[in-house]
Image 1: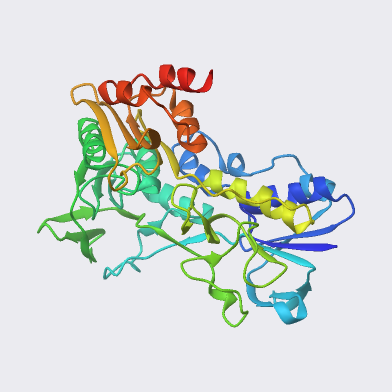
Image 2 (image 1 turned 120 degrees about the vertical axis):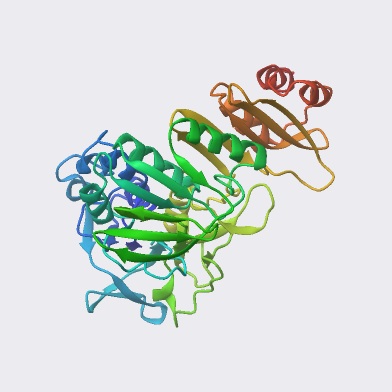
Length: 411
């Protein structure tokens, strides 16, 4: 059996390891399109902040790891998938497969803003990007960060660690709008401002132009900011262009069933590129987070070897540390129709808990400044535990989640 994996990120590497553990004799080829060894993009901000060097991003650090595992690592960009011939076209040649896993991940999205091709403007998605940012993000440099989503906030922290003068521009009406409600997102904004970061929400970049040795960024709020560096973190999109003409059905990502198999038998997908089932809603969605990529990879790899492993669906979850303020969100954090919400907010101390209920089941949660019991929140949501009388107690005091968990699970 020959397995080919497109993508050398976390999903691809975990899938290769799972395949090898399940089948000692299979041929396994891992294809990545960057010159570096397989690495984690989520570690790049820690390179920028100086916590690790580039080798710290490598997913497996032992010399000869993939050779010893019996995995062939190929560097090249996949140009086409040919299901009729069971092959992929890469580096001008064809690589045959019996089973194919597409774990090609995402690419950074460039927003429709004029001037983004000027020197001094970088995404923060590859190690090569990080080198360009490091050259310009010197102490005291003026930096504009476009985007205050999950990735943007991680980059924000690394830029602050470098001692730059930072301005953040976010189109949404709050920071991290896809994981925080308005109360929590605006608390994060105030926290960042307290730490010396200028934050504009409900604001977009209208254009960038050269202004002498600097860049001038014009904003929709009428302000113009001079910058030595502009970092663009306005979102990502799945890498699926090479599937054109393959017959693999796609929407936002690759449509997969409960076994992570695509519409073409023998072709599977995992990670940012897979549009699989959401645990909370049952609808298909792309969930571009590393825990989902890892879960996808294990299940897809087992199914590729013939070990039927249904995937229950991905639970939306995020944990973010923004300049020392830890925030989390799980499941349907924005609530459901007809559901109830319980929340407690301490503006002065930047502490917040919001719980979302569907009848007596916890279906979503947000926390700020509370690092204890976040695993309990996830567990209650993912198990669909009926809380009974404890639902009303949590409505009165949302911080009593551990007591509720113990009462509901130790019957």
